[in-house]
Length: 193
Image 1 (tube, rainbow, N blue to C red):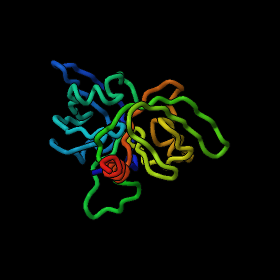
Image 2 (image 1 turned 45 degrees about the vertical axis):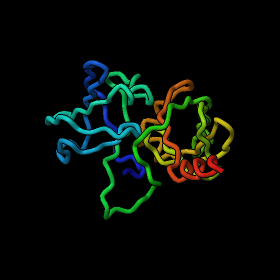
Image 3 (image 1 turned 60 degrees about the vertical axis):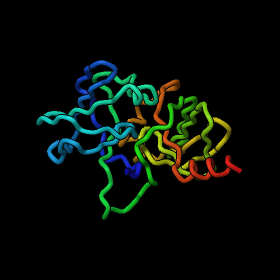
Image 4 (image 1 turned 45 degrees about the horizontal axis):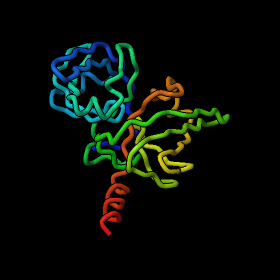
């Protein structure tokens, strides 16, 4: 489980395709604290560490993950958002984030609002957002504003802008979306009635 509070950004240093999988090697500031078999969220996608060396660690994204996330489009040198899994004794500063990406969203608008940034995303499918509800975008816990059918906006504070890969986003970029788990359960229960 994660909180959606990005701990650090990492740099993709190597990509290696094996069968339908992609091995992703990442340089990160906390490599010396990692161990094989730990979970780390990469742009919000939970992946297991399979190898570690002093300069980078490696995770494997399987074909299913690559189909549902923007990890299929990363390149060497890209900056990605990282969060290690939450410890049971930690505060939950964001919201409950599983690291299980629901789908990809598309950045359609980016406005500098002189003190914050308003980002608008479109997405397809049966998921929905609610005004002032939670959403995870590239692993970042954010509050939904301007919730519409298959579209929502988020307001990003300068700290989050500077300490995530949001500052590199451009119109048309794909992002990983994980809709709020409680909202998904409510939506499923409601659909059964």
